[in-house]
Structures are given as structure tokens and as C-alpha cells.
Length: 503
Image (cartoon, rainbow, N blue to C red; front, side, top):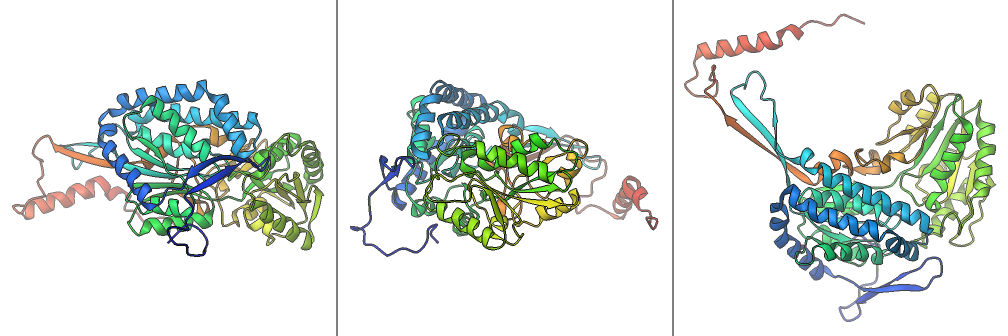
């Protein structure tokens, strides 16, 4: 199974050998790269396999020295990398620098905490097995494949690359075909620090290249992208029982309760909806606002949206095909009775910030991921109604709640992997927090302790310290031992054997 749509079958001589990346702001070719076919991908994985034992053998301290040097290179050249991000995605330099800085923070956290999270440590053997000494550690898987997205081409793949490397794996990285220069820059910077071992490598191309990576025998595959493509990745990896981490789409909401700071909520909603031209998997695409503050919120949100200027505060659509998706969602919302209070006109890749109201819950702008600078706003009678509508989505990635008194209580009821209270998107910038979703938003987690463990496999070791006082694991066990065993279990656990009173 390939990861792209059906296309005409070409002979080997007709297959293109290179592809171009473009500056979406100017439409000009930015750089040209070779297309890595299945053989090239397999060769990269084989090289990574040969380097895996060496990298794992360095231990946490040895790997940390190289990762710290790489981090220093990224920090010193932050503006240089931000220039490349701007050239290939069109996002403003300041936003690009913000993204790079967040990636560096995650690299630092993963390097610092890897030993504590993954290193060998003792665990309780329990009273019954008190004569045993139990330990667990998390060992490298081997070679990890990473398929990255184009919307945050540094921060997002580094959430897998940094944690996989810190856990002791080698990595083969396929960046999006829309951001190959950014991926190449990252890998080249690593090679400056470690030029003699194939610990981090890059393969470039389209869906066929990604498919080849999925079926190349890597020990785990981390993917970030659309839900549709994520399912294809899972299917391709299933052929070799390759485990996956899938960070897919979202349709995140913001819930604004009656006691919320309305101005702050509207300002946050605007940032969550329009930042990076809405090309954010955890971007705010739906707002459910209590009827007592609905009018004030809408007025403030429209004011915020009108102040945001495409081409100044955010760039164009990085992927040209997304323009048609956004246009379709807006047109469908308006055809169903919705109103665009600001924006709503899609003429080119620079799409204005759009606020939609009176949109039915079964409209595309509410049910499907738009991935553009739009937000729908709905009036609700209570926080419970807002929670119900939020949870009705098949997605469940991130979310936000604004309330002075009940924010945490509301957040606890929201079906999502992450929720911010009186803020938006902030969980992504906290390295110690796991990042991921439920439902159609994917499986597994990156970031934090969970992210480190995603790229390791547990190994348990038990050592007997002394003979057991009650030996029940022997064919010499007799009726007396069986009786003592039953008595022991009854003594330890029998007190809970009470009938519960009717409520």
C-alpha cells in the first residue's frame, strides 16, 4: 500500500529523479533534491542498523554529549534555520524562530531526563514474592523511522527525533515534500557534530518514499500528518508488524464559560485559530460560548480577527491544495445558513482570518479538520452543553477552557489528549507533558516521559535473593503448601470481599 493517491504507472526511465521545493510566498523554486526510491531508503535503514549498537553502547552520558553539542549548534544558528523555515513555509521569521526555540527546549529535556526515565531501577516485588529482587529498564528499539509534517517542520519531527535519539535509537527521517530543505538543514547540523556514524539520516521524496520507510524493517515508525494518511501509514506498517506512533488531525474547541475573562478568551481564541494561518493540528477551530457572554466574545473575536493581517501576522498556505479545502468548508457553512462576520473570501493562498457563526454542527467547518485561519462560534446554554458538543467530534487532540472558577472541572470532562485552562496550545511547549490525542487524532504519545518510553522497550529482570518461605512453584508442592497459599491470599485480600451496600 502506498501513501499517495492513484497515479499513472510510469516506467523506470520515466520516473522523475529529483523534485523541487518552493517558496509559497513567491512561488519560486527554493531548492532541488533527489527522490529517494525504495532501494535508497533501505540502504539508509541498513546504515542506521549498523550504527545502532554503537550509539546505544555510548549510554545516556555518551549520547548526551553529542546531543548537547547539536543543541548548541541549533541555538547558535537559530536565525539561520528560521530563514530556511520562512523560505519553505512562508511563515514570518518570528514565528519560525519561536518554533525552533521550542524544538531546542524539547531536545534539552529529552537529553537531560532520558537516564532517569529509562535507566534501570528497582521496583517492588510485593509481599508474596519478597524473596525476589525486581528491576526494569527501557532499552533502545534499534532504528526509528520518522515521517514529519510541513506545518511545523522543525518542532514537530523533533518531538520524535530528539526523544528517539535520547532513548538510544538511530533515526531515519523523511521530511515532508514541502519542507525538504528544512529537514536537510537539521540533519546536516547533526552531521557536523557526529560526522562518522550514521546515527541520524534523511531520505526525501513523496508518498512512495514514506511507504518504503514504513516497510523497510525499522523498529518503530513515528508519523505526523492527516488522519487519512495516518491510516495508510498504519496499514503499511502492519505488513511487518512495525509499531507506530500516529499524531494525526484535530478539530479542537475552546469552551468559554459564563465567568470567563472574555477579552482574554477572545484574544486566545484568535491566536489559537489564526496563528500559522490556522495550519496547526492543535489549532482552535470551534468555539462554544456561554450565552451570557456570547455577544461580547464574538465582538471581541471579530475585532481581533480584523487586526490580523495575512502576509504580516501569518504567511500563505504552505500546501496549495489546502486552499480548496478551506474554500469548500467556508462555502458549505454559508450555504447551510452560517455567516462570515469577517473574512470568508478565499481568492489565493493568503486567506483572511474568518469568523463563522450560526453554522450547523453537521457542516464541514464543524466536523472536518479545516487547517486554515477559520473558527466557528456557537452559543450554548451551559458548560455541559459545550462539553457535549466538543466531545461529539471524532477527533480528540487538544482543547481549551476559559473559566475563572470551573476551568479544571470542565477540562476533566473534555475528551481530548490535552486541555489548557485559561490559555491555548501551551501544553505543546512544556517538554515534560505527553503530547497526543484520542479517537481519530491518533495513537501513542510524543514528548515527556511517555514520549521517551515510546521509543524504548521495557526489559524486566528478576533475581532470587533467598529461597521462598512458601515454595509453590515446584512439583514437590503438596497439600500443606496449597493450604498455606490459600490462607495467605485470604489474609492479604479477603477483607475486600464484602458485598457493597445498595446505593
